[in-house]
Image (cartoon, rainbow, N blue to C red; front, top):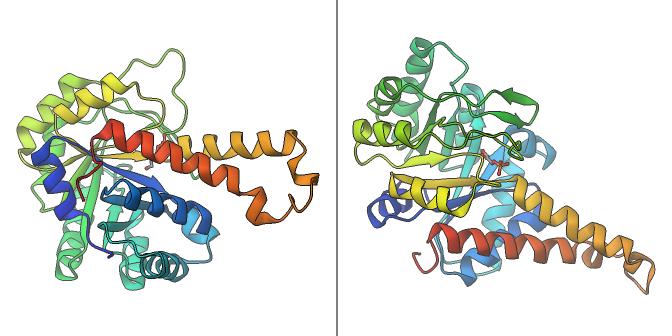
Length: 287
Ligand code: 13P
């Protein structure tokens, strides 16, 4: 069933584990992630960036795919469909299409404007039963053409945004989207600790989940992170499996060029990546 992400993340924070947000790009991706969540009896969040929403044909298409799979594939674990790094306008577009969770990324606005826009969205989202994530301190790296430098958030600003009534908070702590550079300074756990002390029970969100060492992930969870976003790692495993299939000439054998066969190794690779992440995050069996 499609649900808001509030209850699953409150439970995760109280239970000291994290729910994975896995970004989707198409039917295959969505089906693979939902099947794995069901197999692992794990709650799951499907992240959709504005670019992925456009690629799939629009937010109504996304909602149709997800709801259809939940029904026809008998998915009974809690599933939240969540706009990832949304603009103010797109948060409304997604809510209108049936998303029950949105992220408003106002991190590039001056803090006063981020506060004002977040406040407005909190009022409208809560009236519709939609959970809302806000961001303080831009997450570095590149996502959908938006490049950030990997700021460390100001804990006082985090508290100001958390107090507006949002459901979970993404705070930059040196994490970045995509691959981490060899000279990456790591996560700022002192900042995370300070943010958690100021924001209390609020579930915290770690973006850029690809390539963070397991010990760092577990330490972040121990300091209040209850949602971890993973996108690039599924893309990398999908691409590697597809390349292997093509390089082995399988697409030229028999009916190997049939998209259902051509995409199958990539789909299996995504399932393995998602399962591995759910194990590390501790969400298996928590549905
Ligand atoms: P990665 O692409 O680094 O896994 O990050 C995903 C993410 O944070 C989506 O918001």
